[in-house]
Length: 308
Ligand SMILES: [Zn+2]
Image (cartoon, rainbow, N blue to C red; front, side):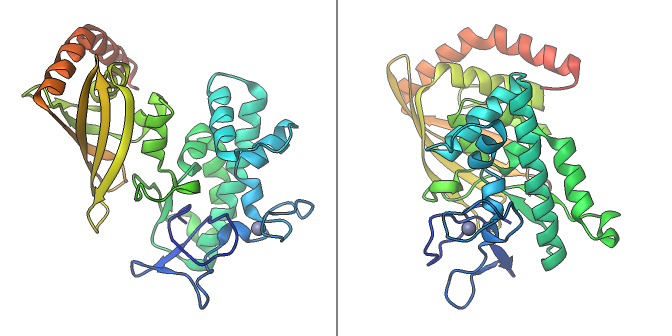
């Protein structure tokens, strides 16, 4: 399942999944197939935007979170979902309970799709990886509970989609980009492999390991202003991504590119950044130098706690 991945002639505004067979999206005779969000995995009393009742979509997004919290339907369900995820992360018990409920609904639906389709991999996109990360125990338990028992010994892996085309808007915002744009550094760190190597645009020596890489990315986002991703180039295998950004540092314009490589689990194991022009690179080097004591301290603390 890949939230929002494929273009289709689907007449309703929610695109919530696609079955990929042999690398090709299976979109059905009329182009509107793969609407997994509109399988009736949900509460039959809830009317979906598509006109059907009980659609799964209504159980797994900001609208579901609002219902569990007893608040009115949000105008922007995705923005509301980010807000609730942040409240849950900050320790609000009701928000955390709502997120767990949604995580279970999402995971048991995914298990149903796995039972139906016997795929080799499930790729989680959009909000799904963030919901799973916020309620991993509930999510994974519901996934296993929903699988036919013969699948449980060796359940097919759930992976996080690192990028989709930046032109895919709506529900299709990628978790890495979403996490960066929301300045959610914990979510960014969750997408890094333990053995990630970070190569900076302004230092010769690469930095090995998740603690230092996460700390550097925190520092980078403290010094960049108006940071925006503008373009993405991906290899057909989906393991290499180049993501072009613009930002300013102390008033100097910077154009740059993140070169990301993904490991077997879909985590970033190689992260190289290049920037231009030279005036921007100098401004960035100067601003990052001023951050480096803090970066080193954060990385050392994270390494000592075995987490970032
Ligand atoms: Zn529907």
